[in-house]
Length: 469
Image (cartoon, rainbow, N blue to C red; front, side):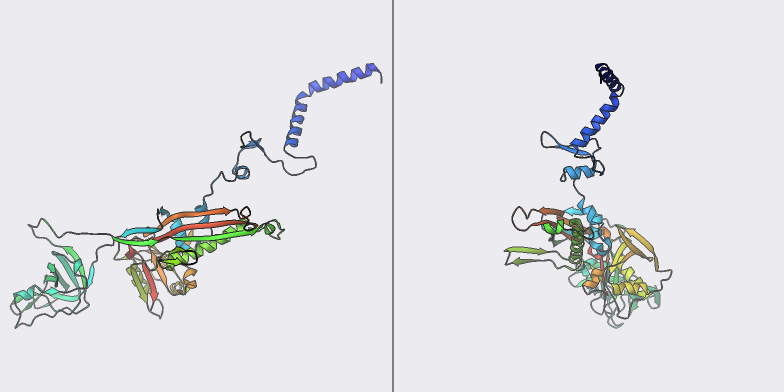
């Protein structure tokens, strides 16, 4: 090849480079990126964003937007997991009480021992402790118009209260003719002997008018409104003092381990540490559900560990009401009575939750509901699918709880007012990784799940146990 031809080719190449400078620069940049990123010509995997080290030990993302996946890969401890939000998604139907308490929110407890106060509404019904016999016409005197009666709860009555005597009928104004209206009493005073009353529609005995007729033991006395005179300025005071109660938090724990050999072994289906943790959380929640329902509050000394162990009390024992039904099964009338008892006589809400064993739920399903009590479609609340049971008294969200079956209470149930179910948490649910390899204990990956908490029922009479007799 002549020198003239060589010089001509060099000039042609130089001109081509000048014309295609941008294309060459782009190709050079791609080659550099592939080299730095560890991607070779024979590698067919998709190119990933480069995460390179920084001067001060930080990590930097190159040529890609910052995402949570990249952040967890480059700095796994930077992003916090909403642990409790994840827990509520793990089989919520199996642990309704634990699920409800998590969705409703909990209060932080600064101690393992929780002191709280309950206050109920003032009682409105009392029973007569002993028979009251009206005087004979021959012995009737003025004092017999103001007798003293003894009840099983004299303290609920004050001067100027009125009392409806159920099942005992009064008299017409003449005092001799029976009335269709029930007897009503007016409270004059209360002392250590009982409640001194006079009758509004009493009986005329001899020459004495407005006498209280005979009342049998066990008669229901219903406290009604107060009646004052024109000159009355004051009335007996009303006090509602809360009652102190105590509950213990229990330390719930669950540990999950996976050996290094098991971790790296080939598996037919993907089964990782995360799958084991999910199964462990489900089992832990089942245990907590049973403790929250039927646990006994106690403190025991573990002689082997030389420490006290604290146990939380279940809400089953905290309920302030109990309803019983016969062994023959449930009827529509029984269900109406049950709902009346659950929704009356307390300051609770008109929407409550009924959880029960399979036998009790089966009895409910066998009923032919009428217009008075209706079973409607499924509703979803707090991540749980309930069946609505409606009546004139209120609405029940009904759910089967297999925890009742496991605890031998398949024929029992419980009605809970969610407005007055409170969870206290001393240590929130957390997952802690244990480095057992570095400590020389075991060649495993280990995670410990922990929560320290308890449940309490505020306003106990807003909740009710249902048992078979």
